[in-house]
Length: 207
Image 1 (tube, rainbow, N blue to C red):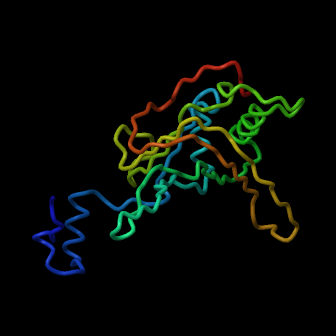
Image 2: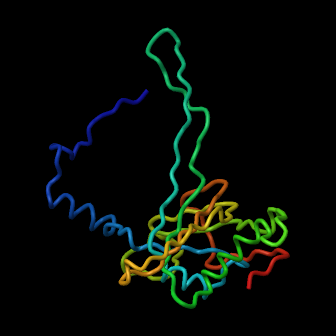
Image 3: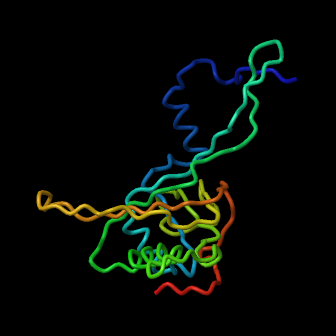
Protein backbone atom coordinates (compact mmCIF):
# COMPACT_ATOMS: atom_id res chain seq x y z
CA UNK A 1 0.00 0.00 0.00
CA UNK A 2 1.32 3.42 -0.95
CA UNK A 3 2.16 6.00 1.68
CA UNK A 4 1.42 9.72 1.66
CA UNK A 5 4.67 11.58 1.04
CA UNK A 6 5.33 15.30 0.62
CA UNK A 7 5.90 16.67 -2.85
CA UNK A 8 9.67 17.05 -3.42
CA UNK A 9 9.27 20.70 -4.54
CA UNK A 10 7.04 21.71 -1.63
CA UNK A 11 9.52 22.87 1.01
CA UNK A 12 7.40 25.51 2.71
CA UNK A 13 3.74 25.57 3.71
CA UNK A 14 2.88 28.84 1.96
CA UNK A 15 3.92 29.09 -1.72
CA UNK A 16 5.64 32.20 -2.97
CA UNK A 17 4.10 34.61 -5.49
CA UNK A 18 6.45 33.26 -8.17
CA UNK A 19 5.25 29.71 -7.52
CA UNK A 20 1.61 30.81 -7.85
CA UNK A 21 2.37 32.72 -11.07
CA UNK A 22 4.13 29.68 -12.48
CA UNK A 23 1.13 27.50 -11.61
CA UNK A 24 -1.28 29.89 -13.33
CA UNK A 25 0.88 30.32 -16.43
CA UNK A 26 1.13 26.55 -16.89
CA UNK A 27 -2.49 25.76 -16.03
CA UNK A 28 -4.37 28.77 -17.39
CA UNK A 29 -5.86 31.78 -15.64
CA UNK A 30 -8.18 31.68 -12.66
CA UNK A 31 -11.81 30.96 -13.41
CA UNK A 32 -14.31 33.72 -12.69
CA UNK A 33 -17.77 33.15 -11.26
CA UNK A 34 -19.41 35.38 -13.86
CA UNK A 35 -17.93 33.51 -16.84
CA UNK A 36 -20.59 30.85 -17.21
CA UNK A 37 -22.95 29.75 -19.95
CA UNK A 38 -26.08 27.59 -19.88
CA UNK A 39 -27.74 25.63 -22.68
CA UNK A 40 -31.38 24.44 -22.49
CA UNK A 41 -32.35 22.23 -25.45
CA UNK A 42 -35.21 22.21 -27.92
CA UNK A 43 -38.18 22.32 -27.81
CA UNK A 44 -37.90 24.33 -24.59
CA UNK A 45 -35.41 26.97 -25.78
CA UNK A 46 -33.89 27.47 -29.22
CA UNK A 47 -30.51 29.00 -30.04
CA UNK A 48 -31.78 32.60 -29.91
CA UNK A 49 -33.55 31.93 -26.62
CA UNK A 50 -30.34 30.56 -25.11
CA UNK A 51 -28.55 33.75 -26.16
CA UNK A 52 -31.17 35.77 -24.30
CA UNK A 53 -31.03 33.43 -21.31
CA UNK A 54 -27.30 33.95 -20.93
CA UNK A 55 -27.75 37.71 -21.22
CA UNK A 56 -30.40 38.04 -18.50
CA UNK A 57 -29.36 35.34 -16.04
CA UNK A 58 -27.71 36.74 -12.93
CA UNK A 59 -27.23 33.87 -10.53
CA UNK A 60 -27.16 30.11 -10.60
CA UNK A 61 -25.03 27.37 -9.05
CA UNK A 62 -23.21 24.20 -9.96
CA UNK A 63 -24.64 21.03 -8.40
CA UNK A 64 -22.98 19.21 -5.53
CA UNK A 65 -22.57 15.58 -4.49
CA UNK A 66 -22.07 13.86 -1.19
CA UNK A 67 -21.76 10.25 -0.01
CA UNK A 68 -24.29 8.80 2.36
CA UNK A 69 -22.37 6.74 4.91
CA UNK A 70 -23.17 4.11 7.50
CA UNK A 71 -21.07 3.79 10.67
CA UNK A 72 -19.66 0.28 11.06
CA UNK A 73 -17.78 -1.02 14.08
CA UNK A 74 -15.38 -3.96 13.58
CA UNK A 75 -13.79 -3.88 17.01
CA UNK A 76 -11.30 -1.13 16.14
CA UNK A 77 -12.01 2.51 15.29
CA UNK A 78 -15.53 3.33 14.11
CA UNK A 79 -15.52 3.28 10.28
CA UNK A 80 -17.83 5.22 7.98
CA UNK A 81 -18.79 3.07 4.96
CA UNK A 82 -20.23 4.89 1.91
CA UNK A 83 -23.31 3.23 0.43
CA UNK A 84 -24.97 5.84 -1.79
CA UNK A 85 -24.22 9.11 -3.60
CA UNK A 86 -26.76 11.86 -3.01
CA UNK A 87 -27.30 15.40 -4.28
CA UNK A 88 -30.00 18.01 -3.69
CA UNK A 89 -31.40 17.56 -7.20
CA UNK A 90 -32.26 21.23 -7.77
CA UNK A 91 -30.61 24.38 -9.07
CA UNK A 92 -32.00 27.92 -9.14
CA UNK A 93 -31.82 30.41 -11.99
CA UNK A 94 -32.31 34.07 -11.06
CA UNK A 95 -32.94 36.30 -14.07
CA UNK A 96 -33.66 39.91 -14.86
CA UNK A 97 -37.07 40.60 -16.39
CA UNK A 98 -37.04 42.73 -19.56
CA UNK A 99 -40.38 44.03 -20.81
CA UNK A 100 -40.30 41.58 -23.71
CA UNK A 101 -38.74 38.20 -23.09
CA UNK A 102 -39.20 34.97 -25.04
CA UNK A 103 -37.26 33.14 -22.34
CA UNK A 104 -39.64 34.22 -19.58
CA UNK A 105 -42.68 33.22 -21.63
CA UNK A 106 -41.21 29.84 -22.53
CA UNK A 107 -40.22 29.09 -18.93
CA UNK A 108 -43.82 29.71 -17.86
CA UNK A 109 -45.03 27.50 -20.71
CA UNK A 110 -42.54 24.81 -19.70
CA UNK A 111 -43.86 25.00 -16.15
CA UNK A 112 -47.44 24.60 -17.44
CA UNK A 113 -46.42 21.59 -19.55
CA UNK A 114 -45.73 19.56 -16.39
CA UNK A 115 -49.24 19.93 -14.94
CA UNK A 116 -51.94 21.53 -17.07
CA UNK A 117 -53.22 24.78 -15.48
CA UNK A 118 -56.59 24.28 -17.22
CA UNK A 119 -57.57 20.88 -15.83
CA UNK A 120 -54.76 19.83 -13.48
CA UNK A 121 -53.73 16.87 -15.64
CA UNK A 122 -50.21 15.57 -15.02
CA UNK A 123 -48.57 15.05 -18.40
CA UNK A 124 -46.26 12.20 -19.44
CA UNK A 125 -42.67 12.69 -18.31
CA UNK A 126 -41.37 12.54 -21.88
CA UNK A 127 -43.55 15.56 -22.65
CA UNK A 128 -41.83 17.90 -20.20
CA UNK A 129 -38.41 16.43 -19.41
CA UNK A 130 -35.33 18.09 -20.87
CA UNK A 131 -33.03 15.12 -21.41
CA UNK A 132 -29.97 17.17 -20.56
CA UNK A 133 -29.05 20.74 -19.70
CA UNK A 134 -25.46 21.95 -19.85
CA UNK A 135 -23.59 24.52 -17.77
CA UNK A 136 -20.06 25.64 -18.62
CA UNK A 137 -17.52 27.70 -16.78
CA UNK A 138 -15.64 29.43 -19.58
CA UNK A 139 -12.38 31.31 -19.83
CA UNK A 140 -12.42 35.08 -19.69
CA UNK A 141 -11.97 35.50 -23.47
CA UNK A 142 -14.64 32.98 -24.49
CA UNK A 143 -18.22 34.07 -25.10
CA UNK A 144 -19.72 31.00 -26.79
CA UNK A 145 -19.93 27.32 -26.01
CA UNK A 146 -16.60 25.63 -26.62
CA UNK A 147 -15.70 22.01 -27.16
CA UNK A 148 -13.31 21.81 -24.20
CA UNK A 149 -14.23 24.30 -21.48
CA UNK A 150 -12.36 24.20 -18.17
CA UNK A 151 -15.46 22.91 -16.35
CA UNK A 152 -18.77 21.71 -17.73
CA UNK A 153 -21.68 20.05 -16.00
CA UNK A 154 -24.55 18.10 -17.56
CA UNK A 155 -27.87 17.72 -15.76
CA UNK A 156 -30.17 14.89 -16.82
CA UNK A 157 -33.99 14.64 -16.87
CA UNK A 158 -34.64 18.25 -15.97
CA UNK A 159 -37.98 19.99 -15.44
CA UNK A 160 -39.08 23.23 -13.72
CA UNK A 161 -40.08 22.63 -10.11
CA UNK A 162 -41.15 26.16 -9.18
CA UNK A 163 -41.23 29.79 -10.23
CA UNK A 164 -40.98 32.19 -7.35
CA UNK A 165 -43.51 34.84 -6.47
CA UNK A 166 -42.39 38.26 -7.70
CA UNK A 167 -42.68 40.98 -5.08
CA UNK A 168 -43.90 44.36 -6.24
CA UNK A 169 -43.37 47.47 -4.14
CA UNK A 170 -43.54 51.26 -4.34
CA UNK A 171 -40.54 51.68 -2.04
CA UNK A 172 -37.84 50.43 -4.47
CA UNK A 173 -38.37 52.58 -7.52
CA UNK A 174 -34.73 52.27 -8.65
CA UNK A 175 -34.72 48.47 -8.57
CA UNK A 176 -35.92 46.07 -11.27
CA UNK A 177 -37.96 42.89 -11.36
CA UNK A 178 -36.25 39.51 -11.09
CA UNK A 179 -37.65 36.02 -11.33
CA UNK A 180 -36.21 32.78 -9.98
CA UNK A 181 -36.88 29.40 -11.56
CA UNK A 182 -35.97 26.23 -9.69
CA UNK A 183 -35.07 23.30 -11.94
CA UNK A 184 -35.19 19.72 -10.67
CA UNK A 185 -32.98 17.02 -12.16
CA UNK A 186 -32.41 13.29 -11.75
CA UNK A 187 -28.60 13.19 -11.83
CA UNK A 188 -25.59 15.11 -13.07
CA UNK A 189 -22.14 14.40 -14.45
CA UNK A 190 -19.05 16.52 -14.88
CA UNK A 191 -17.13 17.02 -18.15
CA UNK A 192 -19.64 15.28 -20.41
CA UNK A 193 -19.57 16.09 -24.12
CA UNK A 194 -22.56 17.83 -25.64
CA UNK A 195 -23.56 19.73 -28.75
CA UNK A 196 -24.44 23.41 -28.89
CA UNK A 197 -28.08 22.66 -29.58
CA UNK A 198 -29.54 19.37 -28.41
CA UNK A 199 -32.43 18.12 -30.57
CA UNK A 200 -35.33 16.74 -28.62
CA UNK A 201 -38.62 15.52 -30.04
CA UNK A 202 -41.95 15.42 -28.30
CA UNK A 203 -45.63 16.19 -28.80
CA UNK A 204 -45.55 19.55 -27.04
CA UNK A 205 -44.67 22.82 -28.73
CA UNK A 206 -43.85 25.72 -26.45
CA UNK A 207 -44.61 28.95 -28.26
